[in-house]
Image (cartoon, rainbow over all chains, first blue to last red; front, side, top):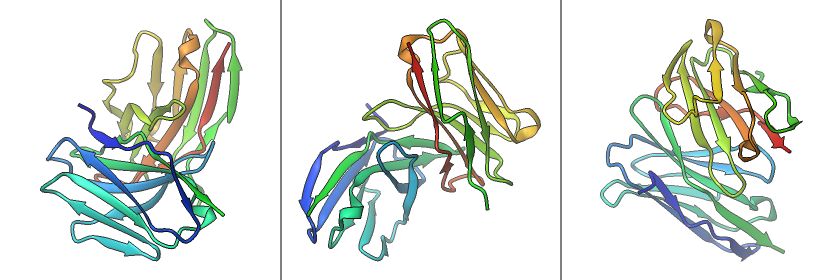
Length: 109
Length: 113
């Protein structure tokens, strides 16, 4: 079983829509959680960390459910510039980062 | 502050030839990673360094891949000999420490023909 699993999509949504991505992880010992964004032919960049209490950054909300071992990312009022691949990342002890395969989002005018 | 710097950005080589990639992490970041990313996939760890020590190289194909991080700063990743299946993007990343986010370089896109 993979450490991190994501629905690869693609998700095609109209501008202004709300879209949600989920990610599950297999190891209950996972300690830190992140969402990264990767534009086409670019490197992954940190979008936001995910905290146990949930956190929000503008139009983006991340949540963690340790009991069910999943992480979610909600994007409200989608913009064309949100089109990218969103990578779910979990870490365990000792700086081990595990990436999901990514979820592709295209926001349509 | 400068980010993670990688070179070259692109490399095209014939199979069976050697190739090397270079990475300069963010200043002060003790942890350095080399990842491989194929199209449509997430990055997969090849090797992780804590300072100059390789602490996780279980996914590194040691028959042809090697890496070093002399003095715990810059790192090089080498493939010898390259195979067609090695065509991918090789990403270097660094982080401050345990459970801190990783910052990526722009990657080296390798094409083996």
